[in-house]
Amino acid sequence: MGKLKVVVDRTLCEGIGVCVPEAPKYIVLDKRHKAVIVKPGDNIEELFAKVSELKRQEAILDLTIDEEEDIFRAAEACPVKAIFIYDPETGEQLYP
Image 1 (spheres, one colour):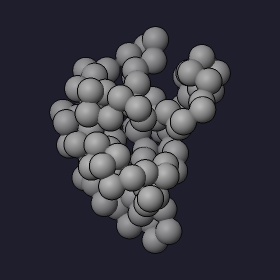
Image 2 (cartoon, rainbow, N blue to C red):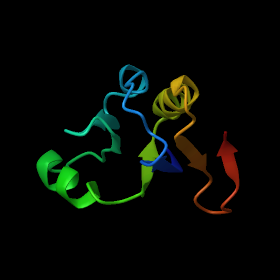
Image 3 (cartoon, rainbow, N blue to C red):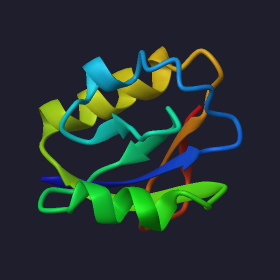
């Protein structure tokens, strides 16, 4: 398993939702139709309340190779490029 830091810029996100089918285990839309990063075991309602006023949500995810590919596909699918991916150890921006 590898780690990725995933950031959603909620000011850029337009709630189009094409990211969700690419990584449904880790990305959902909240009630305002903004992308939210979900970790396994998160309580969705509590998470939605926590991120509702944030401009950026960040999460470090432990992922399998297939899940990493899903996250990159989700970020690539976003037409407004609101999903950013970083190496959590070096801080290097991996996408976009």
